[in-house]
Length: 427
Image 1 (cartoon, rainbow, N blue to C red):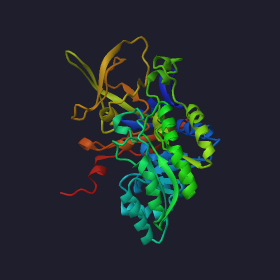
Image 2: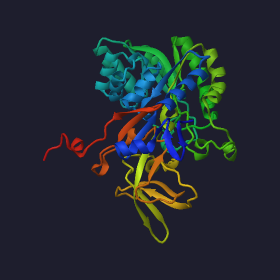
Image 3: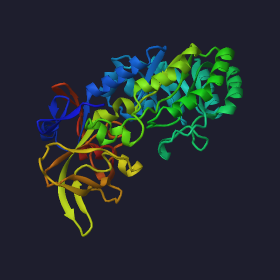
Image 4: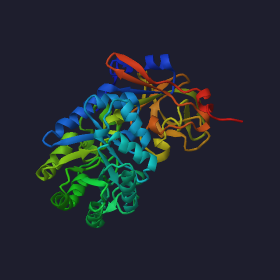
């Protein structure tokens, strides 16, 4: 679900035409819909209402301050993976006491920063990390709240680069090793055993892997509650979105071709709440992509057309440094012209950027309306792992970011300049 719709032949973000934003701010340009973000947060909140729960938005998906502020004002917590992300949360109006700090390589500076700010919990990923947090907390005369991240060895059935819950991955502690590790942690005087956590991967589009992971964890969670009086069970994130264009265009019954309906918050909760409610624990969830993925679009302009004997290339001003997902994951994004053309033919097109890499593409052999230089296109579902993974490869300044709220919009990040990129360098 999102609020990018075609009205009167033009593509809008809520009530603002994207062509107007492109004319004003140039391209490439990231545009976010505030209503999409808040709608997704509200839908998940309602679905989980039978549980004592805390949504900790996985801000690595999109860490723009305005996006974080939207969620903070709705009471969201945050899932952090760096000290820099903690700084962003506090600057955006979030509360450290609602933050979980994840990641396999926390540094001394980050641990000290998080202890000083009063984060809710550290998610511990190794014995060495647990003992280091204990030592740093002791030096600061504090007790660190921890939860051990459990690897349940559940294959989420997602892309190999975003699965995290099997023994082939670097994350967490193997399920059978967790009991002795909690006993060891209980003897460390600068730690407080607050909960237990698991996370099996990202972009999971069916409920079965979540159910399997929770069921595998339940005996352990009950044991930890009895022995150490833990107060929460963090079931991680991973709730996927639909990148398929059929859903975005509202075609009824699109999912029948895939032989499964889309995974919604209601379906997610209907399967998990009955398993979790009897625990009598607070439940933490860490959605990222679900909140913001369909809330963003990358707007780009066609620079040139190039035809070879076999291919038609549309070369645009956006590139893999702006949106790396297609090059990195071979991912799919729906591509929609900002202005709709009637009766035009579709042309099998490779949509590519100007960077000197063969991997710099957004689509291959995609049937698109015939393009000409100056035409503008929107790559939808670019709100997660879009700008946040952008780079300055080829000394390309990163784009501006715009947040749309109804008929209003505002710049939430200015476009970089080459001067910005050279700052700090010397000959």
